[in-house]
Image (spheres, rainbow, N blue to C red):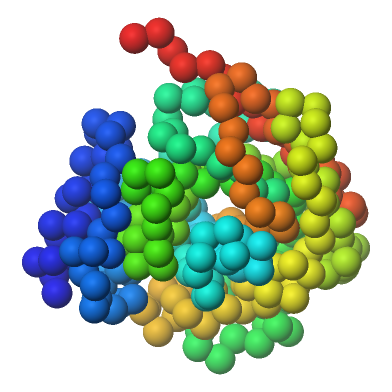
Length: 264
């Protein structure tokens, strides 16, 4: 398995260097397991950390019915968030960092205690959360034209791209995340509305799912780490020059500015 995983990981890593997307991996691995897909993901994370990047959290992908229908899958997945993926709100983000960017509005959990599965309950997840923030996730794909299945997106680090966090922390007991409504504006135009209940019934359920999924792999969700539980709406394409604002009731707003590409 490791030989196949290494070859696929190298192909995906090359996309980061060249900016040229590749064809889907699924036709080359038609009977491959989800375990192989996560091994491909992990090999890339190991390369990034060897190069000096640092894991700062995790994301749950494909957590809402809207996203699952959009991507043609039926189950969540997870990916790693590294320090280089985090961007300050209101500050220009170089569009050249991304290939096929889309935007998703989310709640971000910031942990104050470790969470180690399996067996994590909602009560334990609540105790582990230090505070929550509004967030925008830039999802991206190294697979040409977003032509992905569950194997492709897992191998491609759950289609991770970038994270923008709001700057006003809110205590978890001050907001009901299930009922928290969300609006998403791109370029001043309202493109979507959503609610926290779209994310596995509650974003907290996604946090529990993540802890219990990565725990058997030897991974602990660490204090200070950020967990993105999944999008409250479907994902929308964004372009250089776009300004994106998500407003989440009880949490406030977060703004991302996608700058124009630098001249070559």
